[in-house]
Image 1: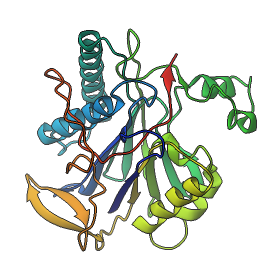
Image 2: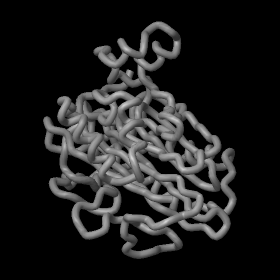
Image 3: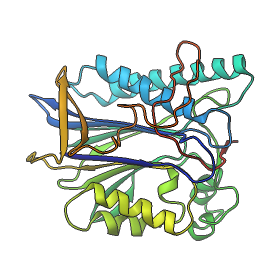
Image 4: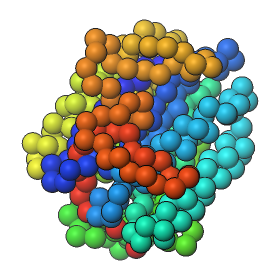
Length: 309
C-alpha cells in the first residue's frame, strides 16, 4: 500500500481546525494495512481545533493498544464506537467547563486484509476510486438527508445555504450514532478520506478524474487543493490518499522510525510533515484543556463556519 496525506489551512481565520492521523502498518498475517483518521473541527465554534485534535489523538491511542492480528468487524465497531462516545463525553464536559460550544466530525478508516472498515460521524467522507468514484460514507447533514429522501436534488444540494448544518457531530448534542461500513477493498483502488473543504467547489467526478491519472501521488492531493483554492474555497482542506496495492511496492514516503511494528510516515526529502498528529506546526495555540481533551497539533489555518442541528 502507498499512503499520502496533506492539509491546507483556510484563508479567513488564524487556526487550522482540521486534524489528520495516518499510519502504515505491517502485520505478518495481513501484510500492509493503513489506519487513517480525518476530523474537521467546527469552524463556527470556539476552539474547533481542540475538538478535531482530540478525535485524532484518541484514535491514535486506540491504535497503540489495538490487536489487529484478527480484524473482526463486530469487535472493531464496538471498540470504535466506544472511543467515539468517550470523545463526545470529554468534549461535552470541556464545553460546559469553558462555557463554549465546540465539536468535530470524524471519519476513521482501516484498510486491512483486502477489506475496508469505516466509522463516520458528520460530513467528512471516504471515497473509493476504482471504476469511477464511489462515496462509501453518508453525510450526517440536513441537506444530505433531504437528498436521500428525494426532497432535494444533488445539483441543488451543492448550492443550498444549509449544506453546513450537521445533524450530529462529536461534542455537540445529547448523543451520537456513528455509521459503520465494511466491504471488500478493490484491488489497485485508491481510497480518499477528506474534509468537506475538498469537495465544496469540486465535484466527485472531478476528484475521481484527478486521482485516476497515473500513479497515486501527493501531487494529486495538492492539485485538488489548488483547484479548490482557485475556485474560491476558504475552508480548511485535509485529505489522506491510499493506493491499495496487494503486492506491496515501494512507499514514496520515507519512514523515520518504527515503534511496535508501526511506521510513522513523513515526506521524503524533508519539508512540511503532512501528518498533522505527528508534529506541531506553526501557529499552534497553547490551550490547556482538562484530561480527555487534547491540545491541537496541526499547522495554522482557517475553517468556514459550521454548526450542528
